[in-house]
Length: 223
Image (cartoon, rainbow, N blue to C red; front, side):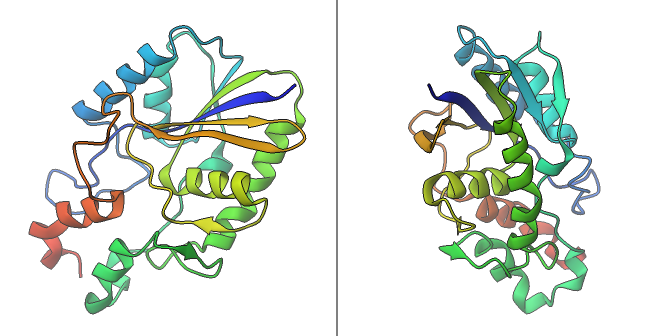
């Protein structure tokens, strides 16, 4: 008998502070759109019995999880926090656009650094043991994990390939839900269900392209 993991990305956030400078990713919360996305997911899960609800320890996943599963005890799993970038000012100006828009393109090598910070291999080093620990616990049947775009790509890629292979083209829209079953093997049943935008009609940009576009008026302040 397989058990089920609903793997969700947090709702939309803004990575710009009130002064127009990039905000700390560790501190940003949901936008009004992000809250609506979480509310739509809450409606989607209304008939689902969740044994456990996990989030990383970052505010945007915790806020999303509390909206989606208001009656659940939210478990904080720091190992599932998002990829850590470095200071944008440390990236040469002529390389900055490429670092953003090509961050998750194709099969991303394990040695590739995310915005000059953590490598994909380092991401796998912390998320796969955490996933193994979750799966080894036989006390649950259905779990909701509210995590991040990069983390979700790593977990989905592992479920699909059984390897530390990062498939960057597994786009994760804000507030989307993926459906995975786990038993002796992994079954990926659905990827990128966006309850508020089922046909993804609102944009054709990737997340990183959208962030780069949002930063356009303020790029001279980043270096």
